[in-house]
Image 1 (cartoon, rainbow, N blue to C red):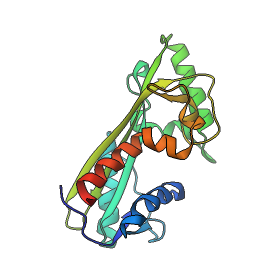
Image 2: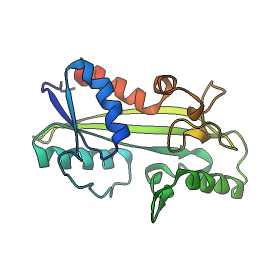
Image 3: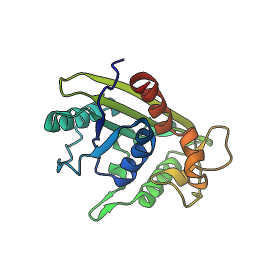
Length: 202
């Protein structure tokens, strides 16, 4: 894998929480982290049908626009009994005219499982694909997964997205019932970031 040799990395996101996560991880390595928002970049339309297509689209758009290496992620939840849905459309299931509502998305997912008469456990996995792209068009791709099951009613108040509904394999608590550190040790994003650090930053 190509090693990252610069000192500034653009995270292709407008999400402050996601940016903070990467600052926390890359800051100690002496890397300055900046965001698509800080550079005034628009959010490209995610037209891909896979996580890697969408992550590539975002990473290359940011690298080409700024001349900086850019890191983008695409992630989502795949539910076995729903044939892998919502998958790449995870955020779309939460869209409302006034922003994303994941409580609504979790209700929708639960309703679909009930309508399908899906037997428990409702196995599912979180997926995260990271793409690190350079301005010359080269990129590196890593993936991480967290296997588990969906629970209902949802539990916990920490975390975001589907975290209150997702109980990782071998655990009795949902992601939303765990501390930030506990979740990172088990999460799909944590696994993908570990693979990226090993491949491109060490």
